[in-house]
Amino acid sequence: MTGSSRAYLDHNATTPVRPEVVEAMVAALGLAGNPSSVHGEGRIARAAVERAREQVAALCGAKAANVVFTSGGTEANATVLSPGLMECSGGRDCVRTPASLLLYGATEHACVREGHRFGAAAEAIPVDGAGRADLGWLAERLERFAAENPGARALVSLHLANNETGVIQPIAEAAEIVHRHGALLHSDAVQAAGKIAIDINILGADVLTLSAHKLGGPKGVGAIVFRGGAYELADKPMRGGGQERGWRAGTENVPGIVAFGLAAEIAGDALVGEAKRLAGLRDKLEAGILELAPDTAIFGRGAERLPNTSGFATPGIKAETALIMLDLAGVALSSGSACSSGKVRRSHVLDAMNIDPAMSAGALRASLGWTTCEADIAKFLAAYAKALAARRNGTIQAAA
Image (tube, rainbow, N blue to C red):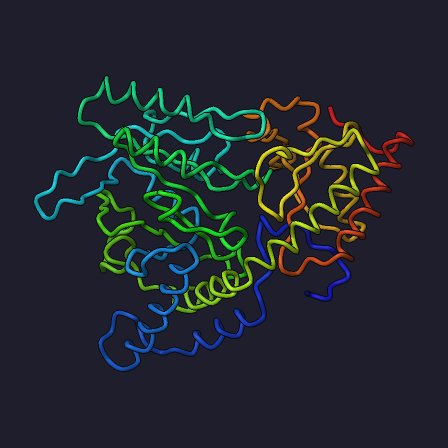
């Protein structure tokens, strides 16, 4: 626990770096060698990178050789969401078929919806009222694509868990459909890693993407994780010295990678107990909110969710006003809306779930993590009670 007088409930935005991870990162800053150098100093740096590769791979049941480090989850997603992504499992003379259509979940993060490189050859997969992908629609669309484009291949992207609601997608079911139609499956596991158990082989995804700063590591380092080793990319965005098996050129961020590895190992070791603890705190938070305001909507509550995430809205509470009041009371959380330069855009996640616009305008998200304790929940509930009192007194701006 941090010991701070503030209650930090925004772990899905970024999780505070664990003290032991900071120590490992500082120590790695002292490594003199370039991991690509063959001398002793270079080999020490290389060993540190490869140890971290093993740690990250272990977090998601993968082989270390199939982990590629990047500058973060956004770069990892942008790299693999390319028409140049190909699977080759038949040896040197196998047929390599680039993907020509991208199907992505309607509730995906902006770096998937807007960061892919398919241009107009991309379509959103609709979701139900809880935010789960419509797998019937997916199967029908892939069947139609295969019939209209013999020999072509599609790429499907479904995140493992949503950052705003915590809703978990049925990735294993989606994988069966995707592979039956000869397509490839990518899953953005940035929010899920370290919060729920992940095994890429059980999920059946061809590739996962991760980010260190969501699980107790530093900002600015992420990873691409392949289920097998037979994937290629025709149009790699980072070309140069051939680092990371040629997938991502440039000298590796050794301190960040070392820190990522340790954070992944710690998160994996603590996974079962921490998930149970956080689910208990989340349930206490939600029960407290509903006791204060029974008309509050908790988004995705009927679906399987991450143990640490609660997205909710109370009629009459506008998100921006509530966030300011909560921040002044020493509580940090996020809104379901994206605010930029004074302009507000409703959450695309809640829009895709067909949530009433008046309700989504008041959407808030509390996300818990390793620093969260019962005192943080109590502090939030006390602050939210004051916001609700202000609503009743007419001194807080209502959602429009």
